[in-house]
Amino acid sequence: MVSYKLVMPEHTNQYGVLFGGNLLKWVDETAWMAVSLDYPCARFVTIGMNRVEFKKGVSCGTILRFEILKKRIGKTSVTYAASVTHSDCARNAVDVIFITDITFVRVDDAGKKMPLACCDQD
Image (cartoon, rainbow, N blue to C red; front, side, top):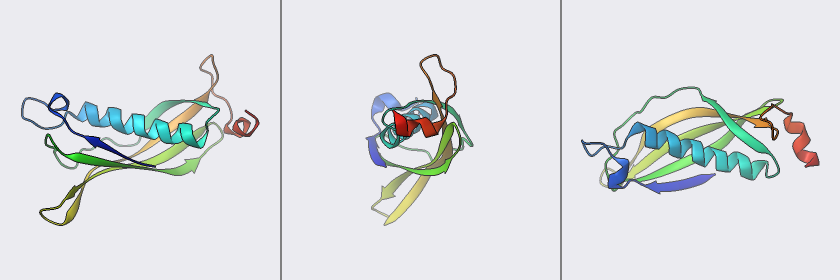
């Protein structure tokens, strides 16, 4: 899944650079949309990201590209590779802003883990 987000002034800190928390929120939201589209009748919650390391600062007005790809399927969980990039036209280059693996677990209405295999029967 590919999605885009425009960095606006309300997303930045006092230095005019994107707050890391906003980027984490967008990665989580975008990856959750991907897992929800892959398993439309299931309920998922985020259980973790393998790494949080911001590679570059991001200025207001930047258009970020989010790419979410399924990486691993477990019994109750699914992991996606998430990358955030920015195309720098002036340099004819793509800058990597953030990369992580994000894992979701399938839960029932009570919040208890349940098998992904049940998704076929929903």
